[in-house]
Length: 291
Length: 235
Picture 1 (cartoon, rainbow over the protein chains, first blue to last red):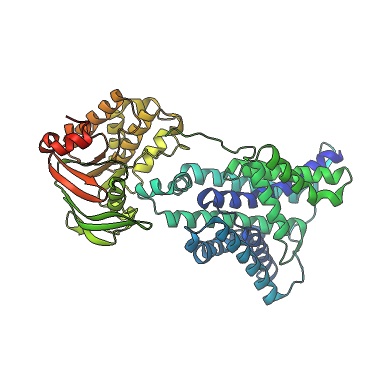
Picture 2 (cartoon, each protein chain N blue to C red):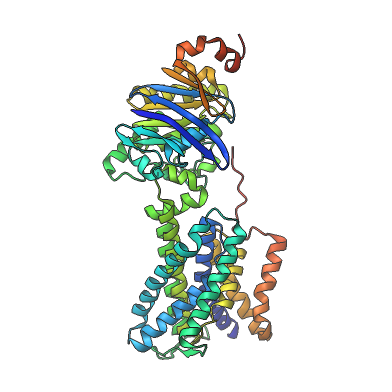
């Protein structure tokens, strides 16, 4: 049952893409900015997790929480320092700034610790369980569980809490939200905090699963998560989840049929295809509003 | 209750309000009428804190509110029903109303006011779980008004509530404005539909290209030749 195994691999990989894609899509939803520094927050999360586990002897879950917390703070700082003053600037100015922030983070990390990769410490014995003839590692199950919990938590925050409702209101109409008494700046910061925390979690999970991390590791997963967000419909939270999973599974299938060198290309073929066929993405809304 | 003293407001490079002064007393319905682009919405946006006056001051009760952030103005008891309703189309009717009470913490009071809003607008109760983007224009106007009332305002600002609605619905909406006012909420109503606005208002101001050109009781303005000619469709 190699196929089933590939499917499980694909879902594990896809859930990492999905976690990163959520941050892209939430930030886009609220300030219409593709935050290209998001992949680097993912990288920082991986490194924070690494230091927490390897140097400070923390377990997986404490390390995960620490990475999420610090990444949330980093995300808010990035927003306040780099993007906030560009709220009313052209979108291309903000986009270029985002690329600048991305490079700044990457090369600051390289400046301080060099570009050598780091091996994630193995904190869990490599065991696998047999399910319908497929070997499923307990690691992938753990990843899957963590992702599901985080996504449920996100759904709860966005739909049931006050800050979540404020986020949805601001993303629909910032001025109308102001008239409700919503503090738009704080709501945008909260969005960056949540998106960045998810990217941080993805970083720790990535390191834990693939064991090798380096300062430029955020570029490709970041781009692919962006593809996943577009595939699902940028701005849509369920879209980012589904887009990430689909992308992960497609990559694993491409791998499984023997074209492993084409794995990375698959994501971008999907991007081109979706932009031609349905640019609004799977869950993209094409809502017409009554005036 | 509200005193606007000689404010100048710029909208980008456009000098949208030029030395505008007006006053709203507690319990009144005051209307501001004028043509498209005269500066009516600019004035309301300034009162709500979405725009900052360049000069002049706005006194509400005893506080200066000119240039204060929108949330502190909502908190002090001024709510706006914006032009074009601006309901949160991606959310349900109920969620829209909850957002209206965003700054309030008194759960019981919110519950009571929600029941009140549903009593004023039974249609909203029928559709409370429906996505508000699917409502008709009139229902969206009701929702926008209900949402503003959920903040329990002392002063309600209404920006063109009649816009794009059928005459029968307009009549209903104005009936409700009068009702809300009689329950103790002061109203500042901005309208192009001068006829309707003057029929329910106590006092009125006429604005033309950023300046107040006429003011008086609604009755006086209804009878003024100038208003008749320019806004009430001739003699």
